[in-house]
Image (cartoon, rainbow, N blue to C red; front, side, top):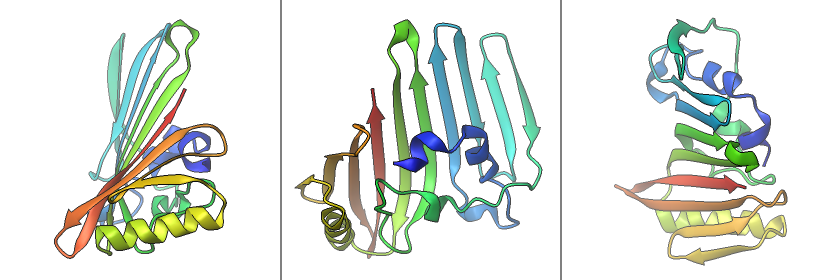
Length: 171
């Protein structure tokens, strides 16, 4: 699962405003909570504006147009991508190392051009091709990636298409 833990958070933030049409860019939130203090970094669809709030103050700035990251095509879990044509709508990262216990939760909101059952069927088939065991309950898939992180991918109707959430927990 290279997306959630290997792409530095600032590069994710850079992906939020590098094009003129910001309407389809993901909103990103990174929360880090540790023994040395807390920090929250947010960026949205407003052209690359980044806000950083911490225990000792806050600041905001605009990122230059230096990153050309395609968040939709860069995301995968052990080589399995979202259903073709899906778009990531939000990214939320919460990480903590309080008391020596490293834990991170990543949530990705997305839209898919297929109905929930069709998208879930396709993704379950892709996981099977990679020999990754998933359990299915309705239009929700659950499994564990090769690094030991638990993931859940849920789909729900949005007209004739679907919207959903990927939730990845690493502890």
